[in-house]
Image 1 (cartoon, rainbow, N blue to C red):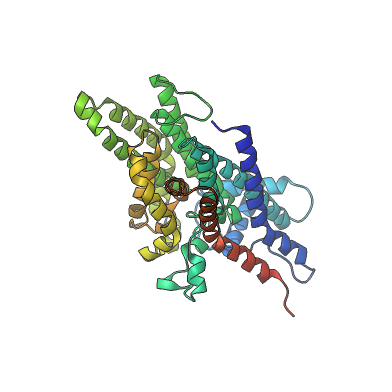
Image 2: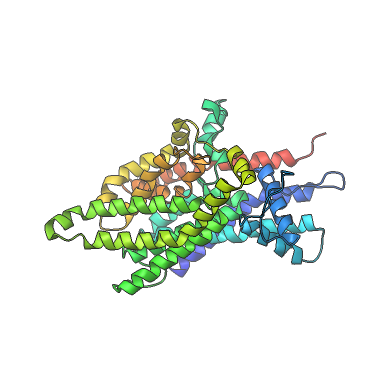
Length: 426
């Protein structure tokens, strides 16, 4: 359970992080003039304007998405309903011109769904540990953490090994970037995490949201149903996140099976692993329609197939992942043996982290986006790693402070750089 005091702390920290992400936008609006208008975006600007184009389709009455960047005739598809609905909401609002209303609606969604994501992250962490100090450290690593991209920039290597540092360009890998500009990813990740929580509840691995454990099979099926429903909704927002959820589920099931092998050998009954598998399959089947629909559209409609083929977001050299996540991975490695041996659900976090190196190099045109959400379990494991240090008092505070500062410098560079770019030059 999470106390009211903890929730107040989460809201306070979340408000500070979201306020920081809003500084460049507020500065842009404050500095605009009649001759120098602010377009509403400072990070991933081209993506931002593409989201406005999708919102405009919704504002103009569309319920299905059409590709705006081709004259080729094509049918509408059930993609980007999040942005279409935001556009419809903007169209209902009174006041300024439609574009301005869409921009304000977008940023309102950024703050609302960003807050929801931060609350969900803390609830997710709380399902794995009852230690408030560990929850808070892991939460701070998720909410404000990045990688060592700032160091590559400082060394004059921003294009090292043919890519920008991942902590500058990969919102799927870093929650701060999601809060900075991607409300649909915030909602998608929220649903991903809730789905995993529901599935673990169905497996009776960790307490469900605000409920006590239940040994009834019907209750387990209910939680598996909720997991599938969460992932189905997530898939309507970002379809390929559903296979990510499946992969994480598969990794967790294998980890659970390995942990049960000694028990099965001694008791001669594989009942629990098979129950978990059936519940996982149920959640997977419930979320499958959106994946099947997306595959059908992208393989049968030549316009969507061409659009998909040019949308390449491939993984860089593996060393870039080490630069982005290496510090957290090192700390997580310190905790891994202890976490695996303990009775708690920490093994599920280990399983999630373990499957990601395989995912990000699958033959898929959006490879690096398959890292989605891994920062959450990785930060949890890293916090466990820090807890293993034989330090106390001032020395421990110094180590934690250095860790938090060192892993937030990239975000500070982004916000400062984007803000300075808005200041008029003579």
